[in-house]
Image (cartoon, rainbow, N blue to C red; front, side, top):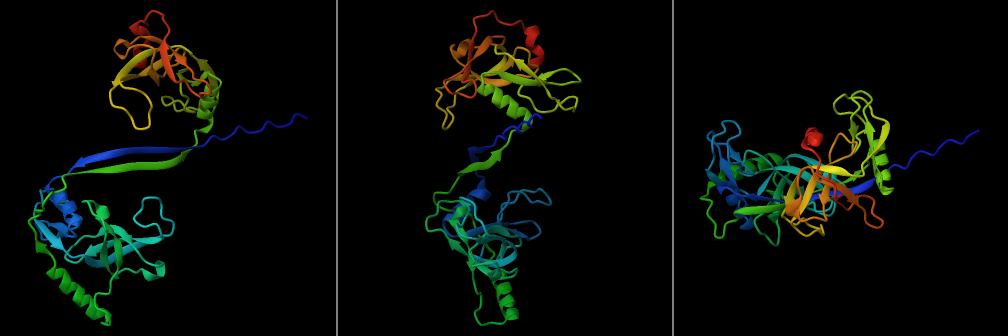
Length: 335
């Protein structure tokens, strides 16, 4: 009896997508963020008198531009909440906390932030809270470190406390000109996504073949196109692909771009060329860096071959083979 073959190893890898997002600020957002730096919370008043915090630049109902700024209070009321028992890195607090929507006194909309509370039993809709300001502020939403519980009127019955809160709301929506010294005019926010990627059957076979310095695609049983990298199914016909086809190793540059900006954590000197390369026998071009030739000599139709580094699991780059350029008609459908 032949022993059953062991299932192939399921590949997994941690991946991080990270980039800085730079945004210039208009007068409304500039005033709002600069105000936070100065411990002032600003909102905008719409044509129907509604005060929106955080402020927006256009009325969500009428789409009219909004510019009338008002100052609201640093205290408010929780309108809804959810407990976060396992904070992630870079969240407002390192210990368990509640995500809360808080309608600040004088505002008609709620702002989302963290509430520092000892446990979910200490949080309730309708509770009064106040802003805890960060010790160091620079004009960002993080200038609000978090919210914390606040007794508006200690020892006062609930109905009286509600009346006191209503009075505070009416009193604290004061007009503001939005003028501050050294206003914040732009922000840079770090966008980051951490996740674990598992490539699946088709791409696992592709990755394992690369470790052997081979490039393997899969052929569609209907249209007979060979997809590299394989996707497990034909995107045109919608049928599964299982027949493996080895392609390359040489290929043709179908199109390319010249990179002039150095990427973070990438040890490649600029300028360099990144290209779409149609490997011989493939019906889909893959991406690869072109080396071994001055960047300004790379061209469509250039014949290239992979260059592997010691221990590398994929080609480091592609270099010219020395063959004559491919005829345009041979690769025009793969551009």
